[in-house]
Image: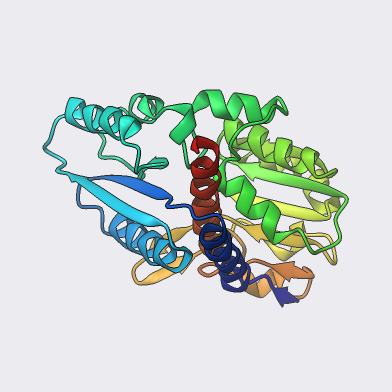
Length: 273
């Protein structure tokens, strides 16, 4: 089994971005809205800042206290939407419970939705219309770009991610279906037949070797932190003799997702010019 490490793929994307930005004389800007004191969120924002610096993208962080008002967050996003030096806006998730995540994300205009999370952008993407690509499915497609594939199964916590991921697969000529986690045991025959298994659940050890076709590609998008360990959905020991490729956790999809976010910022900056 070979590991599909994300760093090499991400570094290539960032290098290509840096050259393109310089060649086209662009000055892309990304604004990150960070609410509260979630330690993991702070780490992720730091990783995004480091990657942005590598690519030559200006990076701005706007912090709000958990005790603050939702209206202040919404107001800042509206101001950023009018700021010409900002080409992409993201809200770092998760938000503290008292904040309405969907309301805040919906405040971002379609023209600056760098994550591709706005419902209207997602609807366009699923319908096959031209729109900014949602970053997580985009990153997964980058990871499987160079490996043989014909059909895929996505195990998801949400219908919207399942639909978005299968739309991304379809656009690349791959037959895909999604299974909600609550129903996955009923669909194990389909899981065992698939060439590509994509999981984004956040349940360590969910994917066992007995569930996987010999030679299958496993893209592990599940992230769970237990103590100091970060674990994926795949049970490494039981799948390593069955799968041909596995994206590790950490170091798999994560770095590529950040690189795809920055690629979206670059594309939005081109479009705005």
